[in-house]
Image (tube, rainbow, N blue to C red; front, side, top):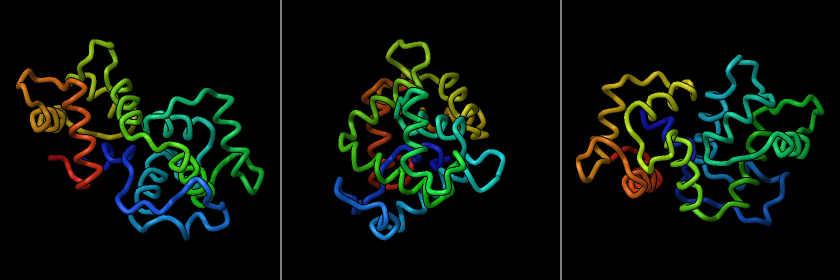
Length: 181
């Protein structure tokens, strides 16, 4: 259950810096980061081709809290697509994700973007139906009972939904502990 929630988090012990070279990208990543990228790659490689195409990458980036437009997606693919196929293999995907991590040092901004994805009706709260819909779109087959459990664990005021502070606390705990509180 925490696997899907953790896709947008950053692993502890991050070794990347903005100056990392692409040739050493995998060498600069921690084992936790590589495992996290592999999990995300496998989740979004919907057709199990061993590559991620344009639409799969767009879905992946949105789920990770980024909001790239189609032209940005094409540019990202072109920057790391060593084979020129228009699809990314796992190494190319790692290079891309490492660059995105190096460019994005504001955890609160990422969490805010993720909250916007889940807050589908823009009322400032994430309820069980909204969370269920987003997880379904991401390919996570969570039950409503599992969704209720996530919300119950994070819902400090007991109103059955997550405000931004509740959501941010859960995401930060996942980042720090790799589990839902």
